[in-house]
Image (cartoon, rainbow, N blue to C red; front, side, top):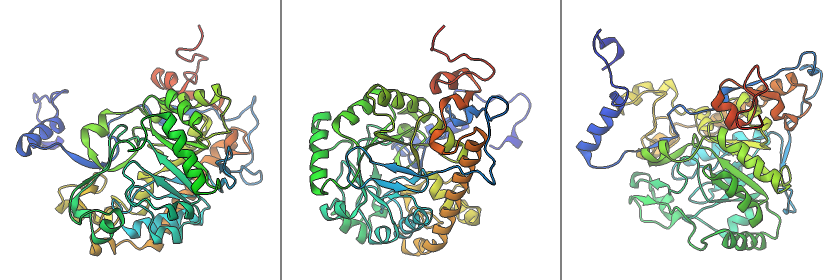
Length: 441
């Protein structure tokens, strides 16, 4: 029932609102749990709860039209002989061919390459389209080993060992049978049209010691050239980061609970993991205690949408950020031009999250050839490049206002929090005070 149908005296339950009632009814009708894509939709503490302290008398701002604010970042400087040099600190997160169409993967590579940053493969292996259009490509090494190929490891510019994902830390991914096309089946060595679930943990290790051995194996396969990333979902972040560094990581990728997924249980997306805002300071603390902050680079993801998010993440200690959901939106996901078709699927532009069904009108999260052809990889790449440029310019604008000549010079002292919760999580003062909850008297 819409808001316009509510009458005085009709009071909706806070615990059993219409969404809760609809889900109980759906579960009772079907006997199966709900699966969807996208990321957490509940409101959680976020970068929106932080503000920058622009320069005035005590700080000296930079002039935007004359004074440079650099954006470059190098990832993998610890051990790799060929670290990844990026022009901007915004990268594209891992999203698989299978969950996405080949056209979408190509568009991501095109857009990232235009602005001098990297994109990432995902579960299911490397496609020729994305390698061909990605100047800098990170190859994900996942528990499922779907599509894993030693030759592709050598073709990549970096390797990301995935231990967890923000949307589902401790859980594996899903790919429904309707998205297992002939090509996806061949790459993953799976039967066509059969539902597939990715493993939640690597088959050949049980802890950090085994991870250290695996990292050495990957370095041997690639001649020590490629940076080795370790990706973790945000949960017990402080300990996980320390263990990743001790196992030999060149880069730690931290994915908060707002991070997206192609398909998993709704209950997982909304109830497992912690927000990036609360996890990021834990990761920085762990790196600082090991004297590895800025030596092992920290890339963070999960809910990055704007240049403000980029700048705030870097002020809290990240070296770079990664985007997934926002990149798909830039390509055309949930665009109003497909409103009529969203309606036929029982949803609307801005709400569509059934990526697992393979019926995406925008041609992004589908393997249907007719739908996939709707996405022009060149046009999609241009849209993504435009969006990445805007993110970068916005972050530069904020950094200059704080008197910084490089994005990496942003620091926690440039931030304050709007509420106690955000101040405690981010470990910055509550606005208008010098009080950081939990720190000192």
